Image (cartoon, rainbow, N blue to C red; front, top):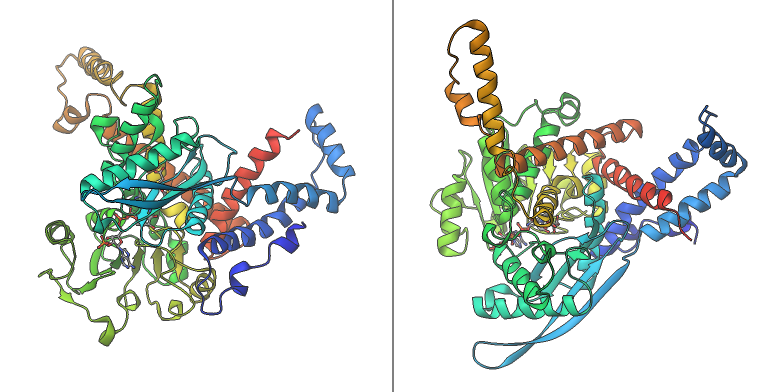
Length: 522
Ligand SMILES: NC(=O)C1=CN([C@@H]2O[C@H](COP(=O)(O)OP(=O)(O)OC[C@H]3O[C@@H](n4cnc5c(N)ncnc54)[C@H](OP(=O)(O)O)[C@@H]3O)[C@@H](O)[C@H]2O)C=CC1
Ligand SMILES: O=C(O)CCC(=O)C(=O)O
């Protein structure tokens, strides 16, 4: 099928009430950007003849090919890149605490095998289905690629409402699903490596790793079958807060760009900016922590069961404590309850930044025109539909897109997986050596000036080598900065203005395209 025929804006046609299927929505974004990239790739292949012999003969060959042939070559690869490579839908029976049994549906989609293992989280929610898991798996491919994390994309889900099950039942559900994934070849450190997502966390990852190790007792790298584990099970420092920390780095990068802030009419820097946070789970809470630490003020929190507002700022630590104790943000005394039925949607209030950190399709063509925030931080996967995205860009809103902004989680998962394969924690081999080396430098300086040089209090704190936490934090900051800058360069190169989503997709698709192209195929 020709690319131009395939890449019709799927969501636009299926979006009467702007409620596109999630997978169609991700394909829509991907295809729109692939179309832009296709034209550029054809133009770029009108190359000048250089001096290197191998390059020259390839260039002569390229010159002989017509634009149509080039387009067909590109389409051949693009068409292979779009659909999910392999999917698993399985049902399994679990014993409940009262002795009865219940059947659950579980899904795993591996979107792209251009790099292995495939990687992506696992969510438990009452409405999870194959479409949602495929959409999230595709997003993982583009996310890993834009962040230069060497994995293909995948995602898993189990249709279940975690609030209805005991801890023992959740453990049996997780172990049973792990058995299914293992049996069908959808789990393993070199095949497919899940991680936390909505309503899963360290505990579920620990059960999964333990079950996989039980089923594969001789597998040396077994603990690398899943990331987001507790430290005692081979986890890495910093994974729990990594997605939120990455959200902060991405928002900080764009908010410190005069060019982007001028486009949306804000001053640079996070200091003094107000924000509303939708979703106060792992991603929402940790993003808020870093926003606050850098001077931003949380004026509203939105959850499915209630909303809070305080124009003087919400103490997010106290709110977290309250949610831990009561299971909900409602009833928190540090802010007033916002009544959406009378006051309208809280995500539509005047603020600088809206953190969309709950779930997909929360901003659609129906409410996009009423959003007043100048920056939307997509901590969640897929919070904005394609039609809403167009409206927001037209209204001069900077949407920092999911595939880039929430890549901090998978980036640190990558570090955890490497730690598991290396069987050694970060910093262990250099800790003492770095201290001795730094002391030797001070001694040498002292000898040459004839004085004893003692380390300052600050140097004393860092005189040892970097800790695991230091390495993870700096690796994450570097990744977010490098990919953010690359996306800005792509936006400039293609003249995309505030359409950072297309810039991120183009950057990402191009990486995967080059990987397939250079690998060749028989
Ligand atoms: N965890 C990770 O590392 C990563 C997660 N993401 C994405 O971030 C998003 C959130 O995930 P995560 O924080 O891990 O999940 P959590 O389960 O920790 O948190 C989800 C939060 O959103 C709230 N919520 C659920 N539905 C709604 C709704 N309709 N409106 C407002 N709030 C709602 C939940 O409330 P309650 O607790 O009361 O039910 C909860 O506070 C998802 O899209 C996920 O795919 C992306 C990258 C990595
Ligand atoms: O940490 C990971 O492997 C994946 C996290 C995830 O599911 C996501 O980024 O959406």
